[in-house]
Length: 465
Ligand code: NAD
Image (tube, rainbow, N blue to C red; front, top):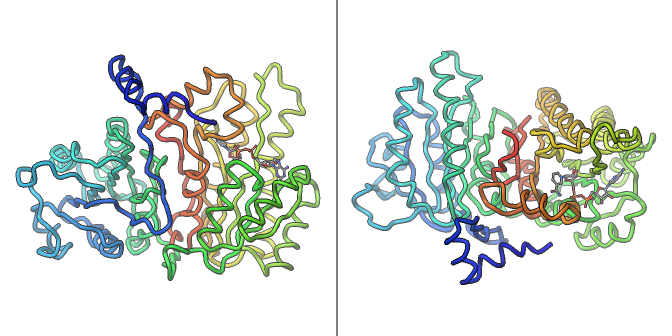
């Protein structure tokens, strides 16, 4: 559905009115197109002394052919092999703007040292390009032995979440906690968060742990040779996921209920994949799916649990059928399908399970006790299964979309819809492709260290954490 308000404020009179009355001014977001460079301009890098992440960051920036500027500190220049990188000083480069600003905070071990954040970001925060990317890299607090260090690392969250609310013009900020030993596995995460693929992901905390992260031979087609199953693929977000995974090289099995057969066949055709008509809540669905994937495809590498329904009513007015239907599709079917795919080793080594949750599952929502229960359950499933998946060399993660422009949100009452669109740092709704790109990152063979994460695709919605 067209966002008429956004179209209005993009016109000259609309811009004038919005500015005059302090109304939200959403910036059109930069989105990924094949062949687009990861960064649209130079990167600036700094770090607290003694950090262990400057070298991995340098390697990624070299791999994406970024123009790198570094601070005047010796340890940063050494990691970046200055004089190859340009040394930056706030006074020296009047008017310079950066497409990315990265800071290694992994060595910060006491609250007093948090001052390094201020010293680095204060002179450059107003030099972020439109759709620019800020990244702070730290050490997971739960891995810090010393309470002082854990405290200082945890403090980074408050910093990044506030910066996210200050940034304008489609720029985003993220905090990436990298566990000791996981340094070599950060490339796929940094590529995603720096690129236009993460357009509607803002102020998130991503954890990278040691895992089997196999860098793809071709970063433009990381899923080449992989088989991916997408449930609820006939329309909306599921269709965007099927298209995006196919673009990345996967052979996509598109699943939906028989009633959606025609649309499903169209999507399967478009992605050069296959269509599977199946109601995932039926008793024999897990077995039927496992057999189909084993016999037709020899197994599956990526499973995206996207199928979902809403049946909204306040609890006192909710019939039991509404409760049961939502729990069955959104949560229990995911558990049953996972059990079958894992018990029979249909999920191949290096497999990726990705579930679609919702910000309603994090924050709760009036009229959605059934839906939010199911979506919070998905988060519980992902977090509780992550260790077992890691032991098999696989991962399981969730994405939690906020307000995404689909038929579901087009059907909302006007006021609720407008509030959903504007109450986030981007002042606009996300697109199905924003969810799909996030899933494609989690599905990549390079993302083996990203396990048990819940990543919101919500433009830093004011709802929830
Ligand atoms: P949608 O209704 O357009 O698509 C959902 C698909 O799931 C449909 O094609 C439907 O036929 C399929 N499906 C439903 N029950 C099924 C079953 N029993 N077996 C097989 N397939 C089944 O919705 P959407 O907006 O594209 O949402 C996709 C996912 O994203 C859902 O899980 C939804 O809860 C979640 N989500 C959406 C938003 C949003 O703003 N649109 C926000 C948060 C989360």
